[in-house]
Image (cartoon, rainbow over all chains, first blue to last red):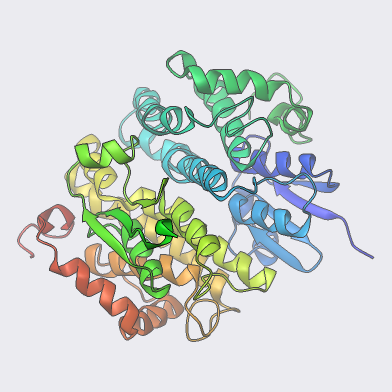
Length: 220
Length: 225
């Protein structure tokens, strides 16, 4: 008897968002376990006992505990091949890996909470926006708009949603929501963003549709 | 077929851990390639091939792949000899996790350009603590991740993807950033094994043969070489 998957997630975390989309696309039921990153719940002993590396998101599949969104998604891809997240064609597959890693290495880590807090404390609150623009812009303009120019269809690398979209959608949405990022210099990414908003699996995965999204108007 | 005989090209930076991972993979898989060293930003030859201007970038026939993680997974699928991923799904995912910890949580935050930028934005004295802090956080995670999986190498007795990432990150941590490794006995043990491994020694040797301005990579006291 297979037990239900569990996903440790934070509503606002773009890394968690990626995995939520993957689970939804593959039609996989899961139990949502909220970890509040603002309250540092990822460092609580109970969480660390289950997941020693303390990262969020984490997936629990029976005895197996996996962290890191890229690793989790590739695991799901191998174990649950329905609605493949990678195209068969190797060159197109490689584009998907590139997009995922441009987001996961060149953009998201530089915008993560600890880094933003450091900039706020050591440079100033105003510097945070400049920092975000510098790094996001570099990743978007320098890389993604160029890379996807010859590959995009309805979605990033064709007419199906693949790995690249799982990384792009949360990043674009997070930049717009958290930092009011102006996407007008990035026409292709803007177009993709509009397309993503229409996808049920992505809608269901949005921060505001998660059980731990604050229900009052107050921010956490 | 002519395509198979046409040598691959790798646009690479000799000191970059991202480039060195790929060079190690190519070496392990016995793949011939022309290594084109790029040390400046905006190199026109690189931009012609890869408009994004990133290194490493691999040219394999008509296919151009940039980003080391993407290149490694591409190579793994196209050239399966000397597998870089174990068959077992759990061990495989440990490799992905280790690679991601380095490529997302550590490397981008300790890369030279960013560290120098922190020096300008905050203070030159902040460069080293910044880099050490982020490396340390990632190493804490790696030490725990690999605790129940390491053999001679990170995830068993063969060199896999995780080792390609760890080798050069450890090299940076220990030699470039002088990180105190006392709390990372497993990682330190792995580093010592890597330094004794001929294929890895080969890549280290190739890097040190390049003529480049090494002062850019000196984050400790100014007078140290």
